[in-house]
Length: 97
Image (cartoon, rainbow, N blue to C red; front, side, top):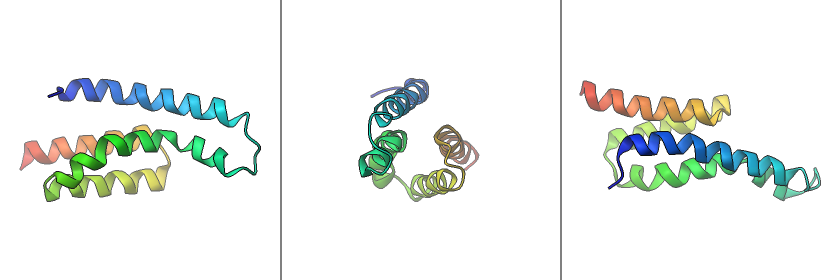
């Protein structure tokens, strides 16, 4: 089992790496290509790979935090902010309840 702090430290690194690769590769793809938009959403794909399997097997609280995470990302389009809100909300709820 991986400690939570390892995930909290590695997730932003993975996100920025995938974002950099997506932006770099998308500069070689024509603007009207459907592949360009796919390359630009790589960070959210990386976050979904971390969050969705655990949330689907998790408690209703964890599933609710997934919905909050997705809503924050939808509104702000900021992957780091949505990650902080989702994980922070989950931790706050677990410690307060």
